[in-house]
Image 1 (spheres, rainbow, N blue to C red):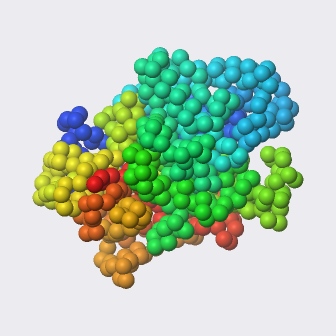
Image 2: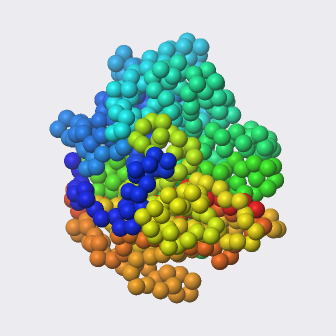
Length: 617
């Protein structure tokens, strides 16, 4: 196994947070446990994963790895999580699902040649396949889907591990990323009645929503979609218009909010919480930033695109749209997931297996050369081959070291079952982390009593008197909303630097604003000139280590917004920062003896983002 983490502290003392959770545990009324998982993982059934080296790890191996079992990734090389996950969605691409695997078995030259080229051409340019090719692809897709469902059934263990059926719909018009993961609540009896919806049918999200509606009406099941990587959509993921450019309507806004209750805001291809250009006063905005172009690599980025790509900005735009049309299309919760194409759901920096099989530990591509090239307009015609890695003079490059070892979805659910995990996603009682298993509670309400919150039944009181993350509050006269947040460090990870509450609001003049409040922190530090003094770094790059001699294990507070105006629409979410720790590049250098480029980032502050709580006038 690559990398070694400190052993999981099985009996860690979680302070007040655990006491409160235990008080609720006797009842099934409220979720008392957070479950950890990945809703966005690709196996060898995905065409692109298969093209770039993941040829032998189907969904069954992905589930085994997520459960903590040892998986052989190549002859003599094994991988294992040091702590199992609680749930997993294997979300293979519906376009060409299984086709590369099947055709590799038929004709190796076809796979590495024309079929691989066809796959990327179809996604990039919405090319029309011949009817024979469509028929062949559809048959393979349907058969592979049935195999995937069966593997999920075999891996599913209610109460212990939830193997959840899903797929990725890869809309990418003109190279701009509009991908969604579709996640089902149901088992084989329902999911086997449909086949995954593909861009071979449509690139329009409205058609995907219609597919999910048809699934629910036909089978009695439930489905939802999870958008991701707005950061490589070149301004299209959270637009002010509908997909086709027509004006936003209340029906469209309601439909998007209905079918897409959560958004994946952090993963290997960058972090999409916010951007330093959008949030210049936020000293922690520049984390895992990918801002050079679209996913297709054929259009470079301009700053005017950014507000339609990042979660914080989208949440603000949602307030504005709600004011205009009477519905908020961007009232979403936030989760993280990996988008790994390795069948290995790991977001641990000291156990990072890369985006794809050709970026595994020790591989030459991992520490040298481009990961992705964004072509200048004049050079695109010279680079039609999907495998062309020649960098032109005006091309932009995302380097291999810029991959982010991120992230996971944290879910407050009543039990570890497909149904309970899905229901938590739908009500948005979920949050994102960049990898650490930080426990976060977040509630909002009016007249919350600090003494009652601190008692053994405090969590039950908060559920009864307020709303958890993902909920809504209605203005109550001139009272200011109160927010309770409690955070426990990852028991096998780094201490906490600080807890912040991020606010976005729409003022009486129709202007959008945001502000980040430091509400509680570790150590004896002061706010100077409006900013909390930085926490000390204990990172030792030579050994690839850090020390929990700074920061805090547990932080909690009851906070009220001093700037609240009852007439304004607003949202609030929590951002948690760990103390500085080594990045995967630093672990590589310390444990594998490799050298990453001098400019590669080696230290970072990992984090968690909760789903917001909205306060309506």
